[in-house]
Length: 142
Image (cartoon, rainbow, N blue to C red; front, top):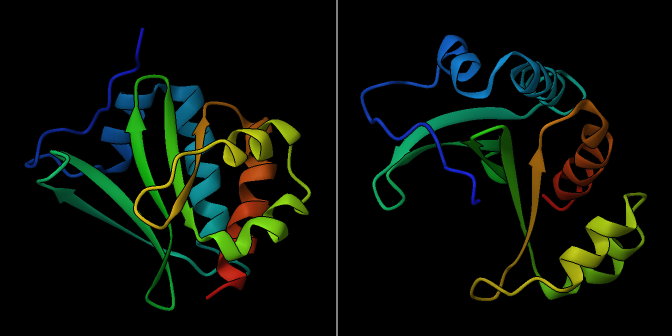
């Protein structure tokens, strides 16, 4: 069964309480920890939540110096982060210290226009290490 994307009401901002209700305590704690880490001094990302009419859902855009590092969406039982890269980054991504399954999935991904998406469906704290490695890499490209 395909998971359902949440946060579909344009009138309900994704506050801490709304996110906790949508994700449940455990996954919300992973998200809160990830957001706390990425918005700290080391990463210095700013998260902007906005309702997008084309997808009819709230998305979080993580920015570093006005450049988008990743997109964040909320689903049943997990949150999704999406990064977009170009062909010229393939070798450096292959050299990253992340799980081979992520690299293999990314190698087989279909381009969106000229961009290659790398998507993480995050539901546990164990996944955050690889996610933060990709955040650091993407941020280094800015």
